Image (cartoon, rainbow, N blue to C red; front, side):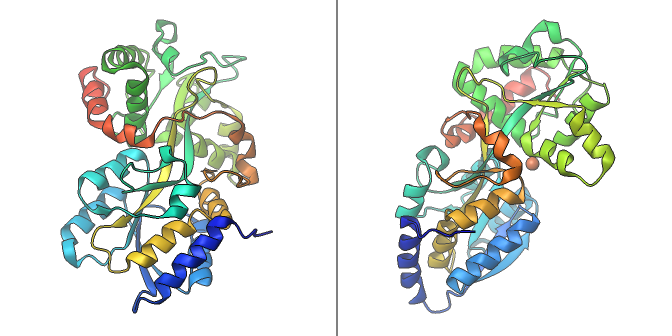
Length: 341
Ligand code: FE
């Protein structure tokens, strides 16, 4: 594998020199809601590049946010990592994040992937797809999320509950595109098309299609990739029995979300925290980071891992990710009003 010395790499080196001058900055306390094997390689690569050891505390995103909040000024946390704009928004509104000023982050990450005040940064992207039963439909029965509300799909759709962050962010993106009123009408139509009460996670929606309980489902792309790559023949059959589709290609693009990270307010190792965030934008780290969960690298020019190569040829909605947080509360209220359980 070639490791080109990028401009960012050079800048990273410069900021690490600054960091080397800070006594006791050789450990980074990372609170992460991610737990993928490839992440271990990522931390090892960071330690090798910087000499900074990574101390990892894993947990559920909301528990980690609560823990950091409770620990307050005594919190050893330097960096918080999680997925989905809605969770980053909760961390932001809990007041546990601190801004990071970095030319590397500004240059390597598109502005839509960064919080406007640099409170968090997106390092990978994921797409929320529509899956259909190829035995029922020879071709995708819809081109857009909007069409999922069409009465012709009565009793056909599987989607998880409105308490799920991924769905809240999807609805937040529809609010950005159409406004609250039109999105509420859409959600009402969607709910009346449900094949069953919302239940389970994203994978369960895909399984619902394979089992014939529904003919259309909504789920993030990597759940399907996981089934496809599974050692389990039954899982592989589920992937084969369902067809992924990228909606809204003719318009704004498929709904995009991110995996992100942020510096924790009160971090005692702010230089190490910044170095870690900057490291996540290197070509090497981008590949590891994406590989962990079959996501897409976000830095331009970085070759995506082969398993998701075919998935990266579609256009994703360039909507500013922070808008998903801004619209979150409105999305939750709207889903509640239409009886989306
Ligand atoms: Fe997920």
